[in-house]
Length: 159
Image (cartoon, rainbow, N blue to C red; front, side):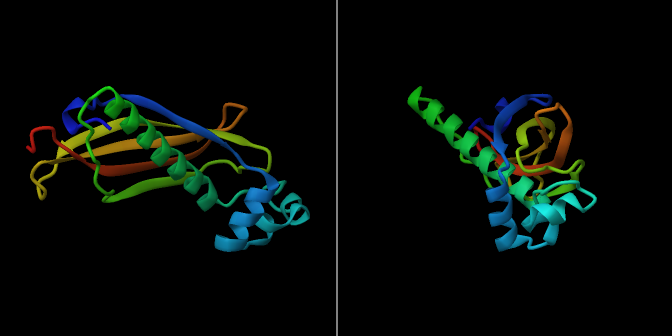
């Protein structure tokens, strides 16, 4: 992963895609969001969603899984090139979480993020705070999910 100084506002990163199957929707819902329209095709069809709908938390969790996996891949590639790899810190939070359109069984959501802000941390010397907007787009090109989140990113020279 890059260091704070190496990240540019406007940088876009495609982080992967996830296909929401009926089975994965029901399994996630049974464990974390057991509402009728996430658990049963007929209930989903008769709901405002018009079909078996993935929980918004499932859509966000799939995004997080892909984001972490992509970061690990980038770190492995940088290490293989002999580059120093920045170990990012935790997230101080997020805002503007939106579930824009339903994600239905069979939909494939492609996720990407764009860096929208960066600043040095006032309370943690040697760290910056990166803010990015992550979106999910279905196979029809419709944006279905978005979130703006921040993360602590180390500076190369420790500030």
